[in-house]
Image 1 (spheres, rainbow, N blue to C red):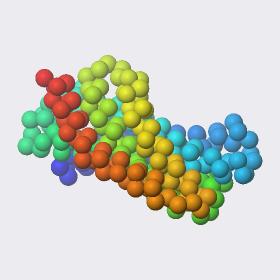
Image 2: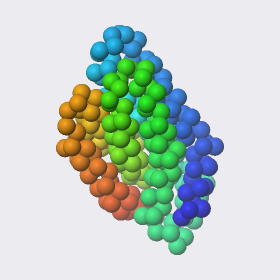
Image 3: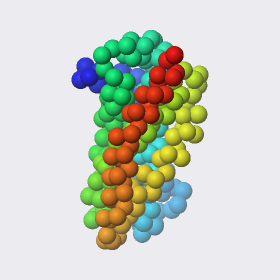
Image 4: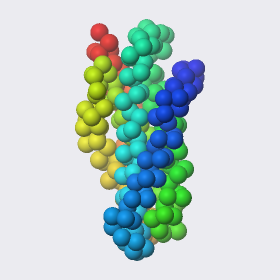
Length: 218
């Protein structure tokens, strides 16, 4: 499984869907927001948690269609499916490689981008923590959508339509943690709910995604 993880990380970086593309999109979105809503520091600080979370969510979408599509096109997915590694483990590896090449760089990049949006100083820690807890759920849910769309030609748009509604709870609670932390309010409830979503996604989605892969590979 370690060899599969290293291979997937290398493929993600070579294919251009890794940290460079996600961070570039994140930066562009953050840069465009002040042009659209104005340069008022107080307004930007108030909407910064939601903008940063929305940017991270959309950036995660950019590379989802490559999670299984490349392996399906060159026949590697059939070989992986017949290997001793269970498909549930393959899904976990794919999600982990996506998080390492997309989710983790977004977590690390949120702090300097928060400065651009005048995020309150005491909100940086909560912003990073909420992304660190919530982005694994985005990768896992994205893996389910990618497994569901394996073999579908030009399935990128369909994948986005399937995955975006499933991202809404993570977006709501993740942004709420960052917003409450920035304003000095209690973050316990949304933080626990956000962690629960991520844990539930890690526990349940590999089973569902593996079932989708078995159906699509028949």
